[in-house]
Length: 298
Image (tube, rainbow, N blue to C red):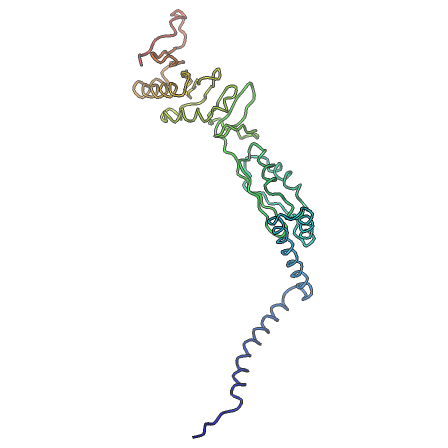
């Protein structure tokens, strides 16, 4: 039995499939027509973008392959001519230090080709400022440098021979701005006392009940601490990490039992490991030598 073949069926199906493509091209053309750019401008921008990316990639490849500096320099300049050069700087997370100091350093890179910016060297320059613990710098193509600052956190106020500074947990001295010195912050006093801040923190951590009551810590003779409490008393501690911690812990125990602070004693001397001494305000009715008395055996 003969089979009839309908002519034109394949052609019709092909024509049917072609319609959506034509519609898609029409919608794309209509969208492009609404843009505020001519076709020539868009083609030029695309060309510049492609050339810039190729130049930037060429610089990275040259650096990776160790090509001569002249080649790298020429590729970097080509990237700059394609529009990949520093035009804007964005500084983030600056709260305590003067932000203008950061901009003075970073803006020296303005109008430089993006590949020519040495991010690591720029970071080293910024971290020379005492307030900056770290700086994370990145390129945001085509023309922006992002500078993310990590500032140091002040832990105490340091006084030395009339000079007042802030210090962080590492003992780094920080130049304060007006209004930055909080009267509630711990004060440390003495020559190079800032370099002993870690030891002081460890000492105070040994007696956490007393820590909030300590107003000032004086580094005496580059060998030991005197602690001053908010109630006015001075506690003299012995030399040596272990002895000073043991003395402070013992004082905290005695204060917990007998409430030594705020009772009129002006000076507690625990430098002798065997005995504790206290001094009361001078009384006109008693000789001056009676002001110092033995308080308790340890």
